[in-house]
Image 1 (cartoon, rainbow, N blue to C red):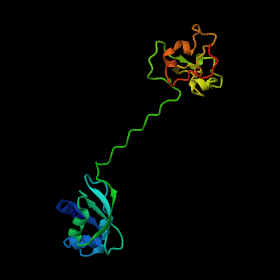
Image 2 (image 1 turned 120 degrees about the horizontal axis):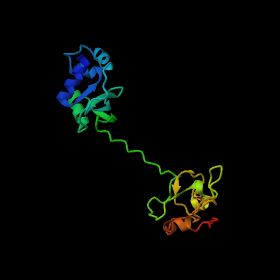
Image 3 (image 1 turned 30 degrees about the vertical axis):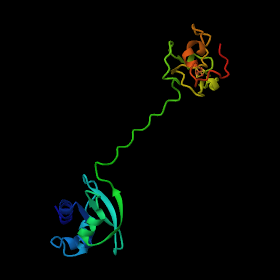
Image 4 (image 1 turned 90 degrees about the vertical axis):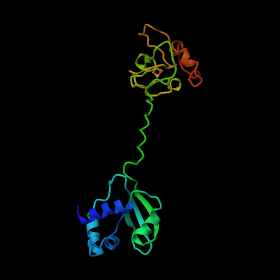
Length: 200
Ligand code: SF4
């Protein structure tokens, strides 16, 4: 363990904070450094980030030109504690990095509903959905000609959906349309049952 690491470890153990400043470190630990410049060079090489349970702060002390980095286990009365240790009054304290292990977990990415999927997932129907590929309104360009009823312009041909615009192609043995197949969907207040569509 070099002088800088020893200084930080012992400062955190003794007071719960370590001031990463050459002049202050040298004044606090004359047993480790003879001058602030020497301490400053050692501390500049120190890796201060990623210490478990330790937060990093940027602290402006009264009378010092630049903010100083401070490591601390607790923010409780930090300004006062810094003044006790250094003799300088802290006039401004900013959190640079919260304590390791205390970051809020990122919220799980919201799963975007697939606009091509069935629009009524909560509605129970006796009949299962039909593929757009079996519908008269599905074009060769993979668009829906009854989008004002179906609510979708580019459906996925292979996805089963309960759609009030469904109109079976002439090859289908079952010639029931969407309203006949899924009356439960039509009963939904939010359904497009009132839309204009050439359904048989
Ligand atoms: S009306 Fe409905 S079932 Fe027919 S192509 Fe459009 S989205 Fe698909």
